Length: 140
Image 1 (cartoon, rainbow, N blue to C red):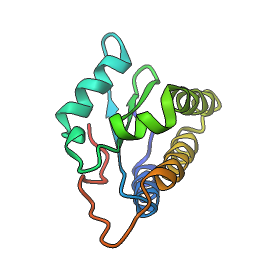
Image 2 (tube, helix red, strand yellow):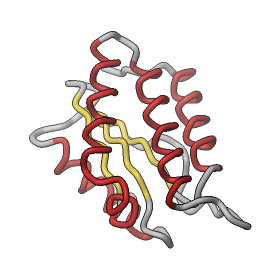
Image 3 (cartoon, one colour):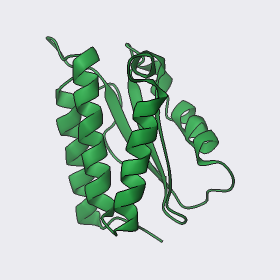
C-alpha cells in the first residue's frame, strides 16, 4: 500500500529542499512496507544504514513512515536532538498521525518537514556554503 502518489513524492522532495536551504541540517524521508515490530527501532536502524550520523554537524533528521500500517517515527541526530528534545519529535509524530487519520498524507508530512527546517534554522543556520551532505530523494 502506498500513501503517496508520484506527484506527492515530488512535493515532499521539494519540501525537503526548501527546509534544508534554511540551515546546515539534513532531512530524509524513508518509506517502508515491511515493518515488523517497533517503528522507532526500525527508524534507528535505517538512520544508521543511510549514514545520517555522518553529517558534519550531526544534525540529520529522519522521517520514517511505514506505509502498510501507517506508523511513524521521527528521529534526529545527537546535536539537533540536544536542542529540541524528545517532545519536539513526539509532537511532530502526533501531528503527522493526525493528518494521516484525515487522509492528508502528503500535507501532514510536508508540514512536519517545514517545521523541522525552522527548528534546524534556529540552531544550525545556513552560513556561506551550505553543502547538501545527503540525498533529498525518498528512500525505501
